[in-house]
Amino acid sequence: MKRIILALGFLLVLNSAAYADGNAFTPLNFNDTSYGTTSNAVYNKSIDATASEAVGNGNIQNALTQLENAQVDIRNDLLNCKTKYADVDAQYKLIKNERSALKKQVKAIEKRIKEIDNAKEKIRKNML
Image (cartoon, rainbow, N blue to C red; front, side):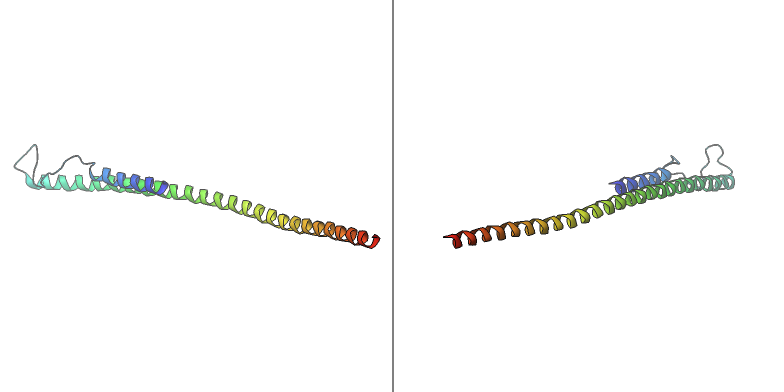
C-alpha cells in the first residue's frame, strides 16, 4: 500500500512539474509586447525554458529525496518486523521443545501408572 501511494505521489510531482508553466502552447517567435524583435523573443524564451527546467529538476530532486526517505522508513519497518519475527520464532521453538519434553514426561508417567495397574492385577490373580 505504501509503495502505491509513493508511486502515485511521484507521478503527481512529475506531472505538476510538467504543467507548472501554465501555458499550453506558446510559439517560440511570439512576443506579447513587441512584434518586431523576434530574436529577443527567442532568446527570452530560451532563458525561460532553462529556468523552468531548473525548477523542474529541483522538484524531481525533492521527489527523489522523499522517495529515498520513504524507502529508509520502509527498511526500518522491515528490520523491526524481522526482529519481532525472530523473537516470536525463538519463543515458538522454546515452547515447542518444552511441549515435546512435557509430552514425553506425560507418556512416561502414564506408562508407570499402567505398569502399576498391571502389577496390581497380577497380584490379585496370584491371591485367588
